[in-house]
Length: 583
Image (tube, rainbow, N blue to C red):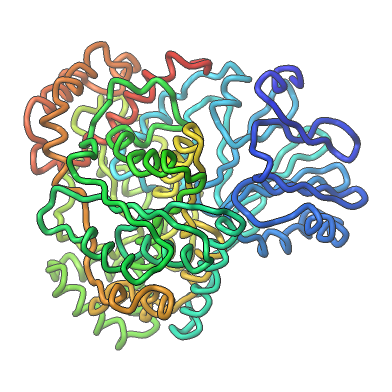
């Protein structure tokens, strides 16, 4: 097994005993290793940790549980691996930005950051039932979504750590839980400012040039924090075809107030539409999640790399943390009814919620596992109306109408099985929804990071850092979520950092106007995709049914997103064929 791993590795770190411990390929600046006595620590990723710091921390670590103190202090986004008295602890991040996968290789437990690496070593085949889960839209249904699609490879839940005992056994231990949302706005804004500032500084300090997205308020805040360090910043704003889009106008206003920011606008005509290049995916990523937007996602990153930037900062993750989940109102109505009733009236008017549906969701007290079990019965039901309130435990995902009966049955069984023991990500319904969405969005961010690495640039999403998430989730829902103010927490946290005029923004651009044109322009490539479909060969879709849908506009009752996951799965399967990953 050791020889098999070494074939894929360029660097290694040894146990205190001298035996191989860490094998892989990484940049020198991404890894810090230190130890004392029988304890050895490694931090890998985006961080400001030093070997000396880890050596000092190791002197106080005598059990794997003692590592918690170090884990809760780390700034940035990184893996933490500890070897203590012959036992190993491995963990990633709370979100899917840094994921840990593990498997048993001929009686030896092994953990990795890439499921496909373990699959290759195992000679594992794709688990057809697990792949069927990836046809769900939206892909937000913990603990099911995000699971490994490879037989014999398991994914570690965010917030857990993996224990590799010396006798060949593995087990998982929960070490992280979300904070109680009780912190008032003034204290919470200060904590978020400190956490986000530290997250940006940990990546930017010591660099001559970095690049940033400059779009909505979330990325604007990250850009301004980067500029505040004194480092030269190149900011990119993507213009959209939507005539009402105003990212460019706000980007110009922001950079006019910053002395060390070079601003570039990428015109809408220079941005690939949705589904561009769907037949050109020859480098498989970790999982099927970005089939419709892969070329679009790389536009800014490629420009930044060509400019000379080796670090690109994004605002990915800000929406889930800063706008928050309206499902908090379900809990608030029971503990602070007057406050909740006022906010409910505001949101009901803002989003035109049907009163009867809203009241039914508010009255629904089913525990998460009961709610999850009921999801299995709605897999093929029509999608919910666009004005449905968002007060339940989560979105109720749907399978597309071209999913085969076998695929529907497989997903139904998996959901029912998971529902028997499933626990929410937080006892608070709103926090559960926020964390579930963070995990889903962070998987997209992780893939963007993987694509960036392949062209020589590090992509960072500070809003998905553990310390930033903790600071945001700790703020009282009534302060963080409001029908009358747009993302009030980041407004308060960034006063004096983001130009005051930019903090008045109450809008957010979307790329909805690029979806239908993308389908029209790339229809021939999409239609060709379903000839000899790999998903059809696995018995998961009716290729003719999805091909028929692609011949014209997506029917309104399906919505544009209905096709995304199917395209992602199909392109991912095709990319695997040319890669050194066994199927």
